[in-house]
Length: 296
Ligand SMILES: O=P(O)(O)OC[C@H]1O[C@H](OP(=O)(O)OP(=O)(O)O)[C@H](O)[C@@H]1O
Image 1: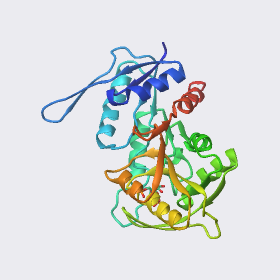
Image 2 (image 1 turned 30 degrees about the vertical axis):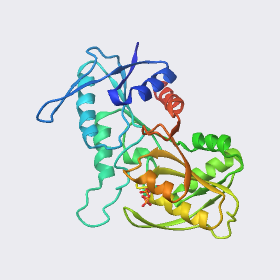
Image 3 (image 1 turned 180 degrees about the horizontal axis):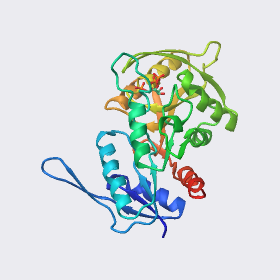
Image 4 (image 1 turned 120 degrees about the vertical axis):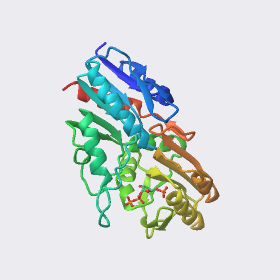
């Protein structure tokens, strides 16, 4: 055994899926919380040269400290090459100082991770003003995969003939990819964000939605307002149905209810973030990405 996947006990299934797909062993990191809230972690005592840490970084704050403890300990226990597989990568949205004094969290967290790991693999990181993951997380191997092909296949099997719609300009990349893969009709809305839970959306001009089965495709659903607002407009314009497919099921409390109230039917997601809407696993893609790193 020269490669091992390490994971925490709340992501056992996902880490095991990855280990199976990659053909490597996996082991759990034991975690105990002391009465004063400090963490006690315990890794397998003898580690191989290559270690992969599986940690999806939604609700990230404590997880980042765990990664510091794990990575430093893994190095002491014999690991020579550390890969972080973080299907959801946190703190990628704040990539600039929009008002003076703000932390540029993407840079700080990216440099923090680069100080711990030799390679980072993630899926659909929310990057805007930087053009590649390596710019945000300056490691030797920074790989950003996309959940869009998997979601496209899912939509093709559940809603053949659907009209695919991206809720904002950013989503055009995923909608175009999915449309090219299966020949869906598609369109991209315009979105203006006024606040965390306040977005205005304009449907694409001239796109006929009446009677169509529409599937909204996006990278993340968080408060659910983007998808809910798009669904309201589509149903008001005569769409026969509106479903939604997202890579990252962040879903803040109340988000799903909001979307259902707006008329969204099915909600599908990848297993990047564990959620009842998970309908497809990214493990095979993550395993393929791992192989490209280990071949170096
Ligand atoms: O469920 P919600 O709370 O509506 O959030 C989800 C939306 O937020 C993100 O875009 P965002 O509006 O942040 O784009 P921006 O980064 O360009 O502001 C993401 O791409 C979704 O479209």
